[in-house]
Amino acid sequence: MSKKQFYCIGYAGRDKKKTWEHVEELKKIGVPEPKSVPELYHLSDYLIDNSGAISVIGNQTSGEVEIVLICDKEGNLFVTVGSDHTDRGLETVSIHKSKQVCAKPIAGEKWDFEDVQDEWDDLVLYSEVLSEGNWVKYQHDKVSSIIPFEQIMDFLKRNDIESQNYVVYCGTVPLLNGFIYGDGFRCGIYSEKMDKTIELEYKVEKLKV
Image (cartoon, rainbow, N blue to C red; front, top):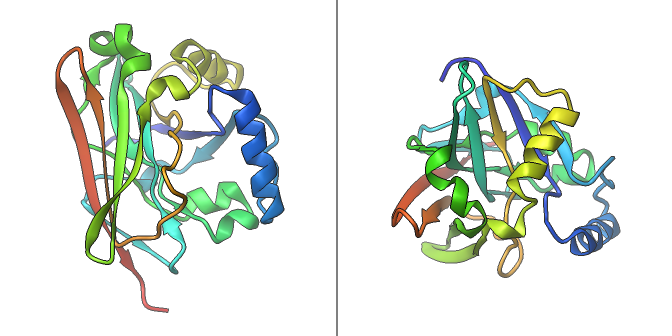
């Protein structure tokens, strides 16, 4: 993938009351309050990964399925799925750093935005974690739980993001039963209109320390 602007949008829940409740819950365990809701995290594009395996340090990292927008140099917009793999132990120090230290897996396939524009809110995101040899359901919800597409684009514009040559992880959906730190992660995005799915799977390899 050629060099691109790369960003993750955090705290992108559509229900602002629940989002702020989540912020308060995280503060109780030492996670700093974001400067804004939603929050934009500028990351290095070398983190974008489609190798099928990532390396991490420690036992407290986990993925999160995200709907991803890709904009090429001509301004054409595409949609795919990725995982905002994050070091949860480092979140109490800095959420930004916790994201920068982990690769960000992304699917190799993508859809033209125009093909899913009309059903954006109804697209389904889901994920599973490989834990103790078994795949455990981790997330499953519609994109309607994330801020609307128009708000995402307005948010990017207000943060002076150029409208070309970028990759943006636009937000995730709630966990079903809390964090699971596994040995693998797989996720997908499903379009009922097209009856098509884009999927992503990767191994999580822990470095020796």
